[in-house]
Length: 276
Image (cartoon, rainbow, N blue to C red; front, side):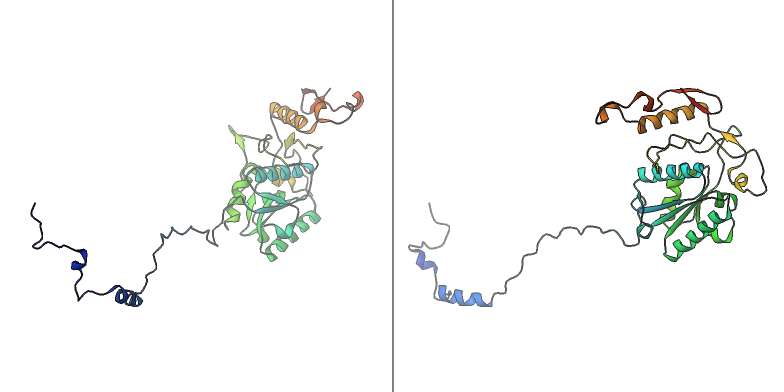
């Protein structure tokens, strides 16, 4: 078969002409070559959380409650809901991001302590949410301006108010709960709760008052007397017993003396809880 080239090459050395560079010349010529760095595949940068962005539910909350057992129960309910939502309830006020102050309006000293706590929180640049009878009865007081308030019958929405306060917004929920025009006792009794004393459960049978004492502002805050449904009271009591009373299998040592065993049966309720 005829070759595609015009002439046949007998030796591979015939391919190298005199004008071609020798291997030694090619080696010296490489010194003028400038190496180029290989570009690496750059990954997309990870988006970082902006310093001014706020994610509610990750902050620390310090709570302070003044007043009666009913008010303390409201504080325990609010703490339970906040903890269930992801907030951390702290005992150290200085490390908290927000102060939740649950006030009492029966006596002037309690209200004075409440006012001083607000001032101290503002001096420390803390977020503040107010609760209890003082802001409910007198929400237009000068020292309450611009602060978030959760009403005594709206404690089941405390997480919403705290969320907005953490974002820097001012929210006020002061309405009363009603069913077909009838005023209800307040927030549900089956809400999450953190008891100050794990062995003591405070169950509010009713709220408000029938009287109108001139020296007491509680009527202005809690309103007229309203009761919780009997079924709701019974169920809350049962839940409390189950959460508080240890089972025999959880105890170490002999079972308790019969006279010291906790009450386990809830009897008929006629305006108050009776047990047998």
